Length: 235
Ligand SMILES: [Fe+2]
Ligand SMILES: [Fe+2]
Image (tube, rainbow, N blue to C red; front, side, top):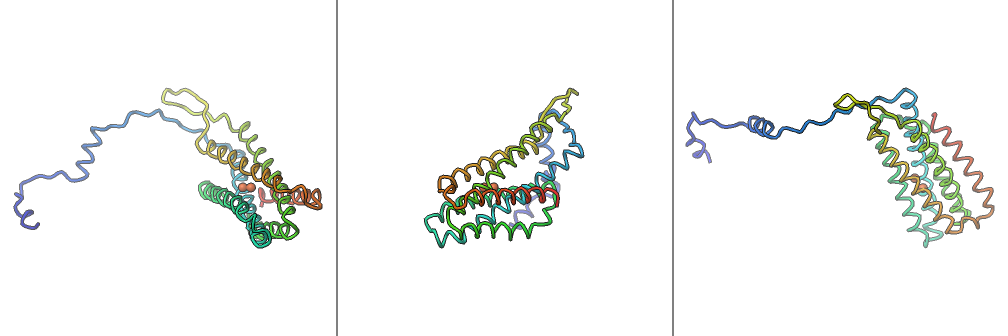
């Protein structure tokens, strides 16, 4: 190897890597792209988006722990339901990790009551499962009803109050467009809302309405969820 190097005359010129890269870049010049400048969100819009991410992350964390509690009990008492609960739990874990990412991207602080959400949600899942499998399913009906409605409320606001971001293209024309951030958030919420409603249907198919007392269990849990949502948006 060294003999090969020695055989190269000192006067020989080589292209360095950076010279080669420069030559390539001169040949392959990128096509001019229109310059889109996104209008920034107003203070109120930013505050709303932060609230959405905070409460949805807390809600999905709660759902993760509710199914963990249900799985802990039902995998022992009703082993035939183990894979069904695991499937819904896996979806909640995915929902939670997605909102964890969004939270990091937007630098939104998590709910300060996160430890309480964890303990409360696990207890709710385990306690209803200990009553009966029907009561566990009634818990799912209540939770998913509130969460599905909550996601629909958010989508309505995102649809009505965030649709007119004006951008200027290369011809200095004003056009209306939805930012990638907003489109991704809306798509995410829609997908998760559909998953939650599927969980609700699954729980009804598995005799949620036979729980005794169905009305009391679902109404208490719905109220608890609404209070939790109100609090997690703010604290
Ligand atoms: Fe979820
Ligand atoms: Fe769910």
